[in-house]
Image 1 (cartoon, rainbow over the protein chains, first blue to last red):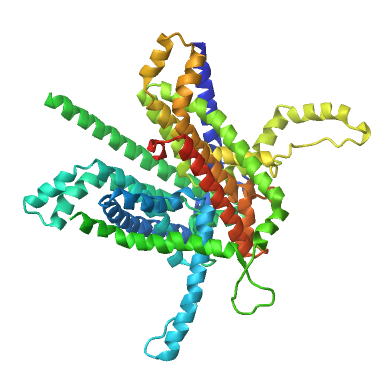
Image 2: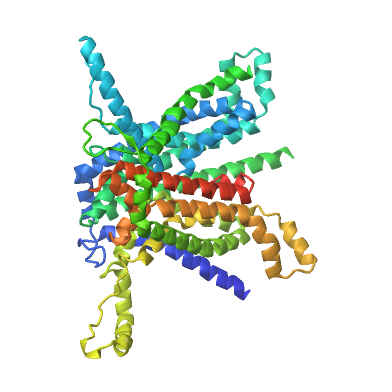
Length: 289
Length: 300
């Protein structure tokens, strides 16, 4: 049993390695001084400063807005795309699924760079097109100069989120009994009714986890946003990056603490719910017997 | 009926064509072209100079690969045993341990890396700790004997950690260790235990069982973990910027500089990004070649 104790020590060390920096970050967010090394007493002043910092608050708002919009759009689009993919013949589906997995496999920086170049090339084309339209008529005036900004950021987020939604909805569609849809339609359902009443409830777990993954990927993303958001728009991660380049301020610690607590609370809630559902399922099973 | 339903995929196929395929094609076009000197319009000429001029950056290439490989190896050496140990514990322990391993992944990696900055600084917590336990004095008292001229020896007051390649590797290991643990754990935990028992019954000792049964069966997870750590490590630019302090330029930094920095040259940047994409494809090909099976691709 000596090896077991050794194992425990090793595990404890790894967890210490993973968590020590996070706890330090949290502890020094309550520091009265500006140093992240010397403790000068307890204070909440950095939290106050954080909420008064317009740039940070604006970037939090941008992050939440882009993540929410990207999650909603990519969940809907990804679900329909997955339904489409899984009604295709294997030979057609396989190459499409390969293309679908490109954004997931590629290094973020490659995706970011390629999207950035694409947007810039598109804006150039659009500029030519818009000035041509403007020159031949005067009813509508099209803007000739487009810039990277919230719109391109959102498009980029949607395009790296959809693959994850498809990947988590796909297996549920594969598990689903295909006869169910046929049966529903034989019994008089229209296709839409069959979709709402049969397909959707069956694949709901996949949709929910796909949406969750999409949201976390969006909130967490830095590299792709960095290349596609332009100079005027900034997400929280980009804001943090520019803050770390300048003089380090404990405001970063304060915001990380808040984020950590939010994530921790969410995880605890999800886990308790899962555990309760499992127990309920178990109770149902034993009840049946 | 079947064909009608597959029409649902059409919008997304169009989307993929525009936001996945065309951007990559544009990137490749950029990589193989340049703006001719003195050109005023946006005409492009074919060239291979972007690839040949990468020769000036061999240092960056080798450093990127070296650091990413070391980080991947360290992750494997820590990640494999820890996954194995967790998989042997009870279900409740496993569940909590996996949540604890995933939790840091939900905090932005910039924040986690930033935290290491305050630990590794010259006046940071680690150096304070070393000073407190007398390690720095000890080092000085030893080093003075080896100094060429003991009279001119300048005693150090801290260990330089920020800005070294070690700090960058540490940042990579810290950020990507969960990517190694998760796939390995998910393979080991599903491993058919009767195979291990059978091997024991047939007279194999623990080492042989591990080498001949457990390790080969967990190989898909290991390969997946290696890719998941190596790819972000070799392409990172924020970690090296924060912990390397500008001394440890990696491929990611080089690309980023071509787009946002003073060295504005998107053609060169696209060429380096293309090389990186080829690396990823090769990694994926190797992984699929050796570790057939798709279960390990499931991440969260």
